[in-house]
Length: 384
Length: 137
Image (tube, rainbow over all chains, first blue to last red; front, side, top):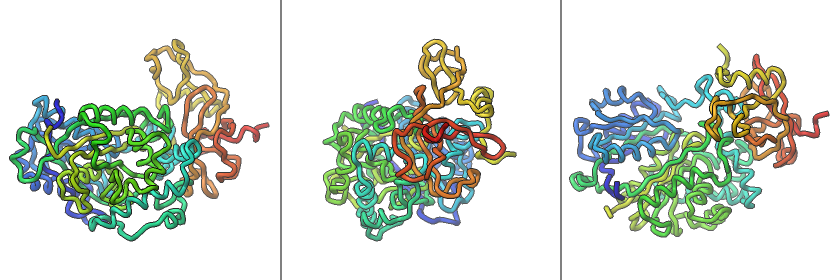
């Protein structure tokens, strides 16, 4: 597979996101799927491959009237849909199917019929036996475990950590669809209630309802669709620890699985960091973009906190990042990977509410399973 | 049926839980490459050997990193915030646990502080926790 052989020709969120109490998780997925099909100018009859993630493939297929000959139900947490896009690209390239619908929905806030086959707490599972009892029900207690060690090793200050949501709120202020718009200062963040020291409320993501979907096909057909194609130039993935615990990550401050994923994506795309016009790094918590910037090699070890605090990722900065407002200000359902990709795609198409000028290359990096998995994608406006 | 947070052993992890009941931290050790590892597995994660023995660990450990969880599960019967910690065992493996027996404050919980394993009631079973080493007699 060469860079740009596969294109995203349909992409959409559910009609409503944020607080959507009258729609179930499945309903959000179906609504997002119908919106993405409409965006591609297709109907269900045109789809011969499907991925679902949290739902039984047959349920979603049946409700949409799709009869797939290829499917994937990879679940590794929030970045599952990024892995699914990567798998769909390989399947199309192999000739297993021609047009794949990647579906996602989660009633994370309203918990309407929340179907979650990615349940980390299954009885007798490793997480249920050894991890969840210590920090159950609170992702901050699991995901944020390495933060304190990182702060001591590299001198990251609470102010620098607080500057991450502050930078993203500046993007959210430009985005009418974001859940939070009001100005946010470092002082505000450091005075928000403590959740899991050193993590405060405003360093945590929102809890939202949302769905979304992608339509993926061969780039040879990409010009046949009404929306501008977004080409998949490269992809990577990595897994390291168990589903709920950073304890299995061999070097928790600089995990190998991030470098593995990033290297694969950049090498496949044939790009360097200087080529990147736009960046998404999945932000369930404020430290995630810091670890991502370093793991992907955009900055050296220990530099990401000051890099963000100095404004480099804000509107007008040299590396625009999390331009929807991110999980901390836009929306975060529980599994944010689909929403993360959709902002990258909007930016490459040139149709984002807070549009960055001339986005030719966009990198999207997501996490899964409280830091046990990650995936990196490189999107492009042109087929090389 | 027990609360969903109460650990459910499997045949492969039963020796660990038998150790907890007996007040010992038992870990699997590969007889071929000598790696001591966690969590339990019938296959060595270092060399794929299936010749595994269980050892009784020293219980010595140190505090790698942690958060102070403001709202722990009621099952802990904690009267306030509770630490959730990454614990580096003297034998090598890292695991998730909590540090008790000291104030749950940044001042009392110092990175790299020496710890010792202890076992505390959790519903109808016991689970692993750690205390500052100097608290042990």
